[in-house]
Image 1 (cartoon, rainbow, N blue to C red):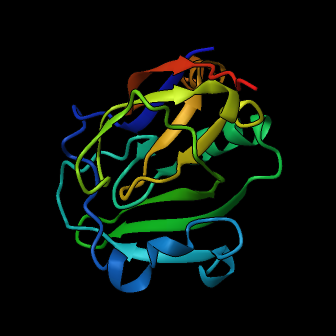
Image 2: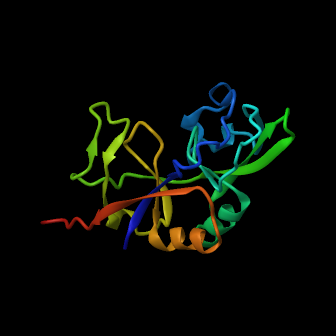
Image 3: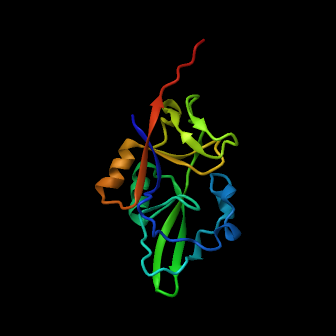
Length: 180
């Protein structure tokens, strides 16, 4: 099975820039077991820009999706929790609702992965696909920055539904076998 890192497509350089995220949101709470610290609905103002485009995927400051992709994720992960994030540009009366998925962190990076010395950034990812077996989409554990990984089937579902702004980086998947 093929896997991909998901992020906002770099061509969407007019994506919304969210103000005050880190003052209101503790990234350590974007996980199972701590998500109750995050309100079910939050409003954030974005920098006013008349050409702001709202892609279906935002990867900074956290991985968020529009309703269209939230519905696809629910088809594959029916028990997934989401928090509603409303982005508002007052000056231009632009608003868009995103959904912050509360996903599992899976320690799926294989030994062949290359990370920065402080383990905050993935330079080249190789995953142990056997650890992803029950997840179609998840966060990658043991990395400082937030990375989202998804199986080919869910990615294809996003694209079949006309998702915009989905940046994909294919990841080499391996199955490690246990010797013993």
